[in-house]
Image 1 (spheres, rainbow, N blue to C red):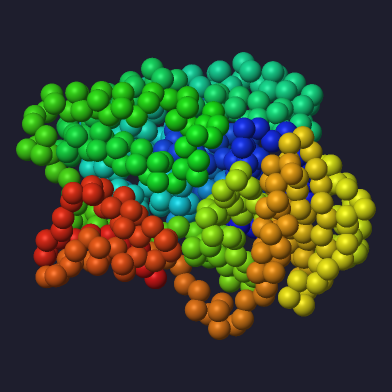
Image 2: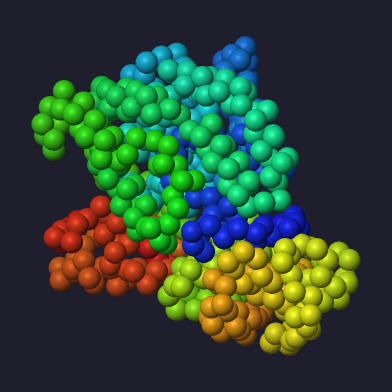
Length: 503
């Protein structure tokens, strides 16, 4: 949770959808390996682009496409937690971008690459040469050619003017979007329809994606990189999506991949075009050594401003709070809220709002922001010495527990949802309430961010012993294999360099 306060508004609880994940999908939509237009995302006016005057203000000052990108750039940066500042990593990404620019469709096009401070696996482009890659994507990649594959794909969107074509489609449907928003704004189904519409408009068309894949593979080969890296990294992104999926059977209609060519199709296309340069593993530079050196120490996962997830526990050192979710739940730490989903279609949302009115917490619960509230269930309680209140609500096929806790000028809110009639509501909500407390000063001081650490395999090391050194996950071996693009049958030998996640 990035912000200490979020805008107080009605919690949408009228329709549950297929399962609990649908309840929370609109609270934070995950963008997987996306080429997205971030128009109408959260805008923070205090976050400004770190511009290079020579490129942006002089070279592109008369380019209408660059003006479009410049207008949206601050929104991109604000939506993704700001820019990730690390000179070593920035030089690495600039080196890759420079090599690709020389062989691009338009070598005169200047590019502006920004590393976004987000753990999401994402990269995208805006008209005028604005390129973005998240630190999460850099952490997943294993060599320079894989990042080059992503960037060349995005550069292809720029040179083919796909962004301009997409902008025209957005303008054509903006009135329809407003109608949906105004008519159905208080209904979850309406918000679902609106969110799907935004993703449909934001995504490049299938033909545009495939065209960018073809151009990108050509650029890879001509720049001297391994042209097979595109297919290789598409495999890695698909594996990451499987690893992080809470419920593979749930509604995936809002996911990025739902409106794009499926991964097998794109992988096969990329490999077919790579064969024009030669046999796999026999051509092109992967740039593994200098790439690993460039990301050694890269921030991994949540940033200090968002708080940390450690197994079943959420901790926020800057706010000085922590709580636990039950065993079997998966925590998803989003910018606007902390979400958790568990067995039995149980969903949890945790967030915070500014407490300026200082009214009683029982009055706050009854103030109209909870749909389906049962007023006779509102009662004051104490949570580990903190003033709190709780209540029940019910809507459609779901029962809810609402718990609010006050610390200083902040109100923290838990919303727990279970299928109607489920006996798990009280037990889940009670565990959440009882685990919430202030952190001690020692706990705050000991809380450190996780980072990518590149280590050299020593004699006697195995995948299991290396994975045992991983932190921040209870699926250590699976995550070790994922970030190192290894299979179950893979082995390591002395002298190999591998990535682990540690403090």
